[in-house]
Length: 223
Image (cartoon, rainbow, N blue to C red; front, side, top):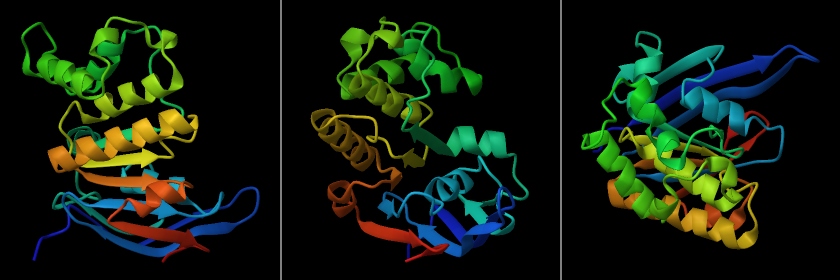
């Protein structure tokens, strides 16, 4: 039997302000290599909080999280995160004063990889921009791009360090219908091609139906 690439066990997360509320109540989830999982739920149910905990951006109040065989309580989270996890956000989170290529290369630079001409990281960035159909825009400032183009840059950036897991928080939430379909198709296609585990938080029912598993977060429980 294939071992999970990520295993979350009995995750609990509460907030005290403005009123005490438990948003995650003993949530457990195993993700298999290459699996596409969609997580649905109403606004305020804690979907983004769960995604941030799975990506080690937030700490749970209780529970255990093991990623790629490493317990996050005893691992260097910044190294684990940069090597193993790629993030795609609804708001893109690009650096507007940098070019498309520089944005894609940023996680590689943070990981202290060479991004010089002829380096493996730069070649991967160019290949990824080709995959998301943006290589002709590589020298453009990201502030000049459309919303759909910005999200395609975000996909390439998330993949630059060849992570095993991709976490996407409403990746098409700011896009029109045409660009939404393009982003969905590209994201799923590239993850299938590269064997990535993909987790998407979404309100989009059509996207959820494309997943291997569609789960619902409701009243602190993952169903």
